[in-house]
Image 1: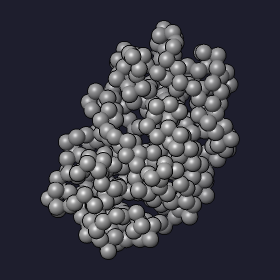
Image 2: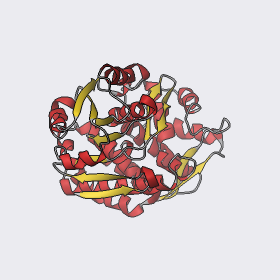
Image 3: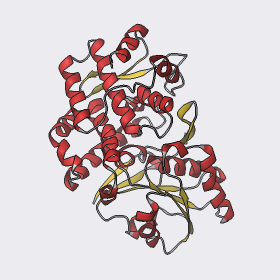
Image 4: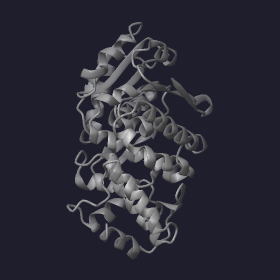
Length: 357
């Protein structure tokens, strides 16, 4: 087992990464403060892993709530199912919530924990690659609004993150690839050596080689933890983690939540960001080709969907959380492994890049 630490002072917490961790009570018990535990999962994950997780919590008063599966259910209405269960079970403010599932379950459980009785502890047990390398670490929680993704939420750190790599063996191929989009992101924004490693180990990741997955997950979590430790609430450097996300969130919202996976939309966004960076003279065409080749090798898209117009995407990007004083900000690449935020650019150039994608 590999253990990393997210160092945030009093809010610090461990990330456990390994195989067959799900039923290990000793990894959960130290992070549960009271006697009551609510386990939140979804209709896909619960049949696979709910009983094994509950078996590690036999010393506690437990209940569970099973949410519908899909990004389209990441909203306030479905979130209320968690609150309904907490209140019906008379769970108090020492209750610990446990998120067992992908990014939607983790984000919603974390947001519920931040809100219930003004804040109760929670633990992340991510079961998708995307959640393991990204959404479970760093304390971003929330739900979507019809006009914008993740626009309602809170920064709220978990007590611990438990990553059992064996859960990836039941993950659909498409979901695995979606997670690899976020893995590629870490190499591009601040870890060129990791990007180069991904180029030579893509096939191992796609066939779910345990050693390759363990390395990629640990390296991704390490990179994210370093950034979060310096900028917990995204006032500066943490914005760099949004490479590809300004485009990606607009694509997700425009198509309708659940029509495209988050990682797929981010992959398109990274491809667009690479082309934008090249047009500014920051990286060259060979760099763009390398980035797109790796994205496509991971079985991810690089082209904008035909069903969305440029006008729709531009309008939706205006609702992005990174907009400042009406200006859409982008994370672009000064070089491979070096990212930078910009808000001064030629709007016509932005439009041209999307037309040609």
